[in-house]
Image 1: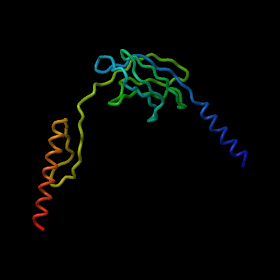
Image 2: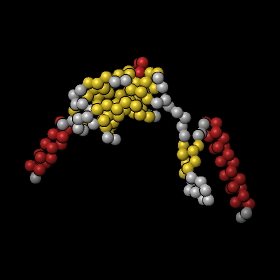
Image 3: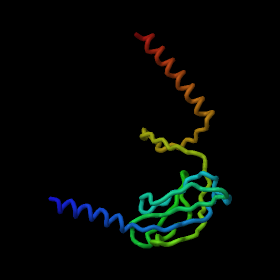
Length: 154
């Protein structure tokens, strides 16, 4: 039994040791200008987070990518609202300088699904703060009048 745990422990340590890393650095741009300081850039390989950093002054970033994936696996870079247009190959123990371009942050669109009755489908709704406030007030008025109507019929 002890040899089984030793073998399992050795396997876990060996698989961790197989992970290698590379340094990717450069400037991050959004809509042609430098990325705002403090923005977070996340590096991903095959849907797994393998590194990340905060953007510094003038859009400067530096990410240490660590993975045990095979050489030349594509590394993609993300910020909270989207993906960089550049994808780089993972090269263990390498250093790569590349500037990243991100699409600008766009207006939030929420898609609501309503099962079709006669005709219909997905509805796209763009909500601003004023419309949201008005919507909440209108909903409360409808609820109050509905409760009043229910109580009158009893």
